[in-house]
Image (cartoon, rainbow, N blue to C red):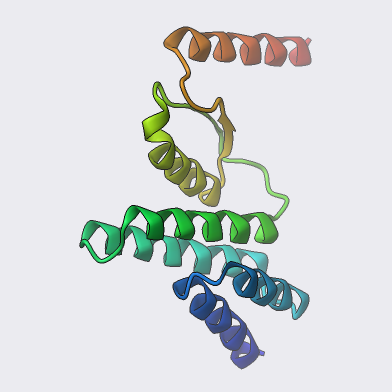
Length: 145
């Protein structure tokens, strides 16, 4: 069983590193269908994405590589998503559209670590953050009554 798991995870890794989205998607579906634990699949995707970030920092990857890796990471997390109680909630957004990639990277890493992430999007003003927090606080307050 361990050998099968390793083969499935290796297939995911090879597809990810080659930036073959559909091949990685199929390898992920096959791994899950074969009984590879969702947590292990998510952990592999997180490791591969962190490796891509390191390669970007080293100058080995460009923004295009990072964007492709982000897309693969998001797909893998979506497929491997398990029903768990979130560690907490995080509200995220950017003040300008040029920071969307960094926001999306942080969003995915937080989600991979078990947080529920509420993404307000791009070009979000400080008042909108405050409004969103107040709106969610009112909702929580009503639920407690």
